[in-house]
Each structure stands twice: as structure tokens, then as C-alpha cells.
Length: 178
Image 1 (cartoon, helix red, strand yellow):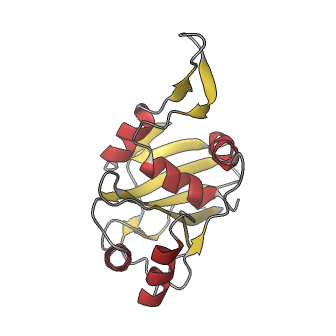
Image 2 (cartoon, helix red, strand yellow; image 1 turned 90 degrees about the horizontal axis):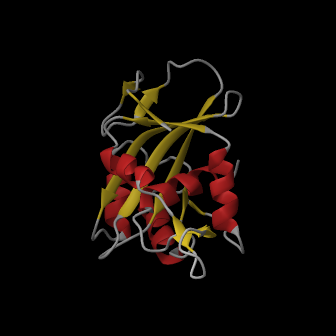
Image 3 (cartoon, rainbow, N blue to C red; image 1 turned 90 degrees about the vertical axis):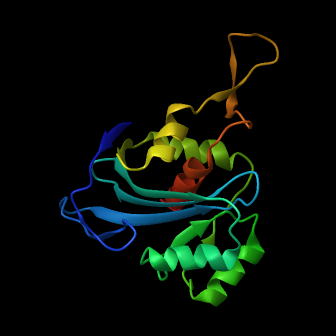
């Protein structure tokens, strides 16, 4: 991954109003819900499948938000009508956000092995992160795999569950329908 500075015109809240990088770019949006211990993460990215590039344009982290406050945050970012893919383990929050006006929000489809499938999908892209996304940069820099309980120098094929990965999960959700 690498850090870049967005050259698009920005709407309120740092979300791109228009993209000047050329053709082939699509915006994607993801939400990973949190509350007390973990923050809710809202991620805005641009994907270009032709050149296999994923740009993280915005990553907002907030603790203690209920669904209406998350929807209000998205509204302030100019994203009330954006097609968000969100953590399906929070269906009540998704429904409340729909009632607030986020009618295009959908639960992400999860199943056995979906985390690894999502990570493999993300690994197909060169990742560029806008320099102002400091918490996302911190997450991706410190991401680790679960250590093996058998050998000290081995790791499992699963992410470590004891790490901050909320923005990364939201990014995975945003790409889940590729």
C-alpha cells in the first residue's frame, strides 16, 4: 500500500464530488458498526478494476454512535443516498438508517470463510490511502495474522481477533460485491 493526496474536488466532509483521475473509477462505501469498545468505521473508496487500484479517500471512526447518528454523519458527508454495504450482524441499525433516509444501504453477505475471501479480494488491488486517513493507515500498518498455538514462528490463515481492524472491515465490505 502507499499514501497519496487526493486530487479530486471535495464536497463537505472530505468526500469526492467528482473524480479527475480518468475513466474506470467507481466509488464504494462500507460501514463496520461499533459502539463502546470499538468505533463505527465509515469508509469511502474509489476502485478501478482495469488498473487494479483501490484508493481510500475517507475513513471516519466514531465511538458511541447509534444508527441515527451514523446516518446523520453520512448525511453531513454528502452520502445519504450512497450505496453502502454494511456489517450484516447489525440488521436493526441498517433498518433504522434506511428509515433515516439511507435507502441504498444493504447488509453485506457473510458466510463461512467470507473474511478470508474478502481479504483475498482486497489483495488483488494496489491500495492507495489518502494521507489524511491517519487511523486507517495505523490499522493497515499494524494488521497481523493470528499466531499459531503450536509453533511460535507460525501464523494461522486467519486475522488476529485482538486488533483494531474496523476501517479494514468496512473496506472489505465496500468491495464485497466486486
